[in-house]
Image (cartoon, rainbow over all chains, first blue to last red; front, side, top):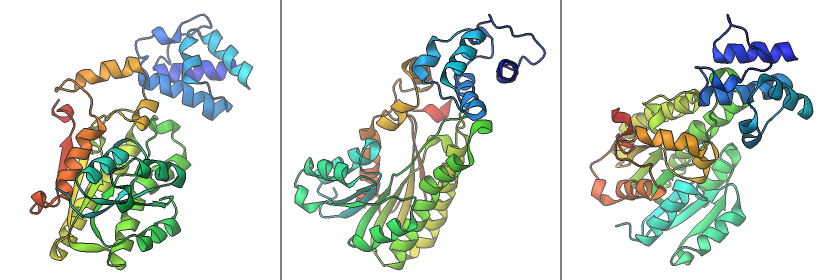
Length: 74
Length: 242
């Protein structure tokens, strides 16, 4: 699951040829914008059946926090 | 301006729809309000001036039987406002098939079927005015809005085509293309931070209010526009100019 989330995040951020580690703040990449925001929430819903409310999603910054949130809600 | 005109408004329970109902009632029209929730509609009808002249009919416009029932129930109309609509802001790759169906059904097909049925039942008077609520997104793309934009773009084409087709019967058809209007529907899909950035794209310096749209709709429903048909009217504070 971790690998899948990281791959999808890289795809959304258009950084397929870069490393994305668990401690990275995925919201600080150049391509992060409102569309990427919607895309991550939609991806988690579609691929993992997990719906993270916008307010909760705002608090998440690192890849690890995102993975933990998904695990908590599965 | 609309004294004793009989007008049907879809999507009448909130936002642009209810504002239009209230304003047209103030201008003297007799309104038929329709949306899915009859209880909500009754409460709103009670708030209108001279509420005895207005009626409510519950209809789920995604269901053809409801549309037919609605068309059968209404009196002969001087005006029709097609305002019911749904929006799902989502990048295309994450849109679900059922969400595509819902947007096309409510935003496009329901308008086609309702006008078709009203014509069959001869419920649109000679000289009547159809006002279709489209969206500026139909001509100015924004990301994550493709299916909604497509549904409204198709509505524009439909609007112009039937304007030509219905002109010999003296029925006028015009579409209004609002930009971002502050309403319950639009507040749900955007947060404050995003909105404060987005408003900078509006040369007149603000988003629209439901009353801005209601003003234009009332004008189109009135006899003051008796020589206007087939128009797509941008109503967007200059958003589409940039």
